[in-house]
Length: 117
Length: 111
Image 1: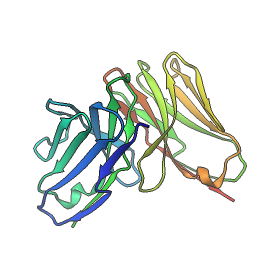
Image 2: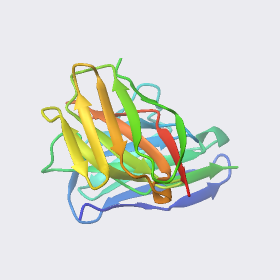
Image 3: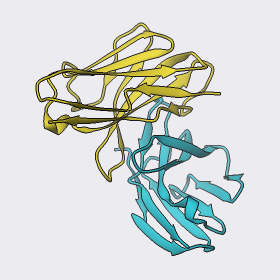
């Protein structure tokens, strides 16, 4: 149980285009989902926290107009990278916290590799 | 500022050795401490979760300890195997629902 999927697993796009990444909790309802980015050989940095039905909370330094997050249902959150540029190339990982779990219980997706040419 | 650091950054050992990976955190008001494994280009696999009221957790060849007063956690891997090769991340959980990740230890176990 507690499986989180991401789609796509990898994507290559041209500079200036927008890319949408989906994060789904397959067998539980996630009241809270988290989006992280990871640069090569670096750790995970939290980008934003999203709660179902409300606006996402972004970490300091993360542009909310560039990284659009929608958490429309208890099993789906999407991250849209708008007007992507090469510096946005990274590994994006989502996680989901079941509504019945306490703080710190997050189940992670397999990640999405974004390459912007 | 809440920070988590890990040492060593990289470790290469022969098969069979017992290993200790270290994790330190600056904010002792930790809710829990987790250890994850990450294979190259992959997501995270949760290994062990220690609540703040606990001292240690064990799973198979893995044992993790937590000392809040000193701001440290260790992951002990017994009888290492080549399949243990991966990056190991620790993360501090706080009551803000955030996980603060460490910098990771890249482990290579060679036959």
